[in-house]
Length: 269
Image (cartoon, rainbow, N blue to C red; front, top):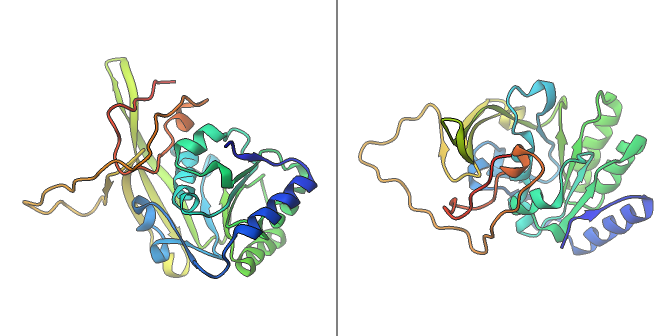
């Protein structure tokens, strides 16, 4: 099932109503994230009512924000949460599905128009996780109202772009591709370094290096224990071959799987 493309107030209201009917308020105050990312977040998950920003644009020196964003949503979506993405027209159903997101519980609002804040607020009322691409400078009063609304409704607000005052901000600071050699070959996976910084329990910055699509988390400052054997991981059940996407970043979007099958190779864009 393709992600729901939302256009118009009636469709938005219907989506919020449907998501609200299937939600279980108060049952799970912490939404899960993939183990690869859990060490970066207080409580090792997405706490309902929190604001978790994903840096992008000029403030992000290394690309990879879209892949990181999809990785952040994948586990919560897979385990039953509703997600909405506002203002990211380049993000499509193929990239979301490759990342492990359940398309039947995904709403896409690619072009919210001048009523961006109204659309985001309406989705906060009924959706578990709301991603909102930040359309330039946002008045502090509007940002504060959205954060307060998310806290009151138990929604996880994920600003995609610069956002002052987020509980945690995740940012890809470095990355390298693997798979190309001597001018030929195929892009297979990408190693990225992700930095987490914030306030309160997240005031102390954390950084780790991981693969996208990835199974290996490598804390940069901790050497391996002598004589220890690497863990053995099994592929996630139900993994399917990926389809090409429109750009290298979306094509190589992080998949919520425990291993990378040698049969799943992505052609270079």
